[in-house]
Image 1 (cartoon, rainbow, N blue to C red):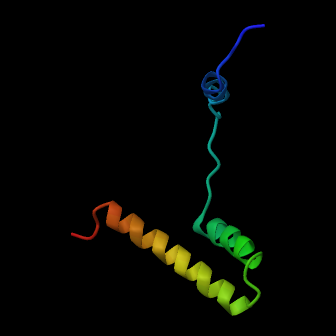
Image 2: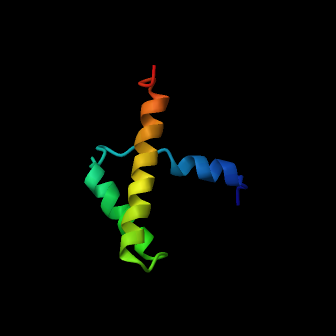
Image 3: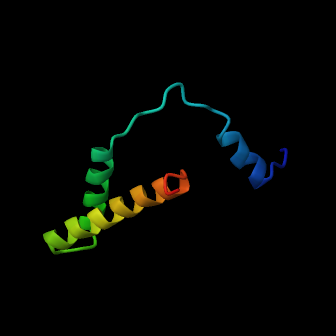
Length: 70
């Protein structure tokens, strides 16, 4: 029985490259965030407010990191 380190086993799992990448839309992200947030927040308005904050934060960080804020 050959010994294989955990690192070597983990690396082998990532050898397979998917043939195509699934494309997601902003709407898909909003739906996913809403569904997950509903698990933790009971008030519907608070769910929408929280999701809006998260999406806004993600988009503003993206603009800032891409250099659009010159």
